[in-house]
Length: 148
Image 1 (tube, one colour):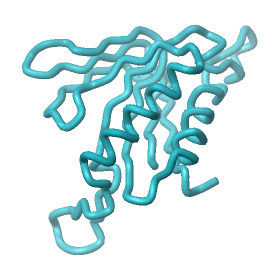
Image 2 (cartoon, rainbow, N blue to C red):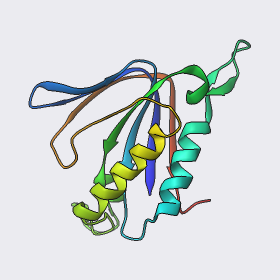
Image 3 (cartoon, helix red, strand yellow):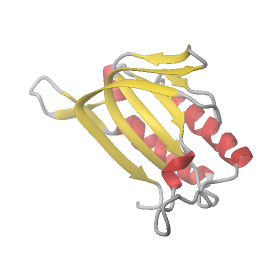
Image 4 (cartoon, rainbow, N blue to C red):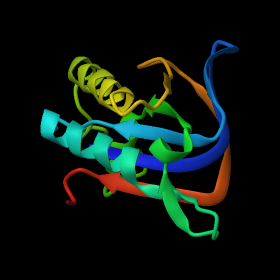
């Protein structure tokens, strides 16, 4: 499982010109699922995202988690995180999980995040989406459940 986490002051997702998810301060997550991801990967990633200290404390140090500051999460499914660009000019997406499997795990991941009392908004799985955000910092972190 791969997640690109962006600390934001705001974020929203639009499908067919309709805003379907919106947050203020928090994280926009781009979430990719691969074939061999398990519940263990989901649990690890949800715990990591919920507890990373990426917000500033009163001394200006990144020392506060999203759980501690009351921020929200905008979670977007993103199979292209598993693009393979080694050959040719058109990426291969064979490392991305089958959509039925990926959708199930993506929903489980979002539910795990909600279990940390974090408000979670989502995009529409498999839809063409427009994502708008204001990256704060900028702070952008890549997390891969296989690199732990």
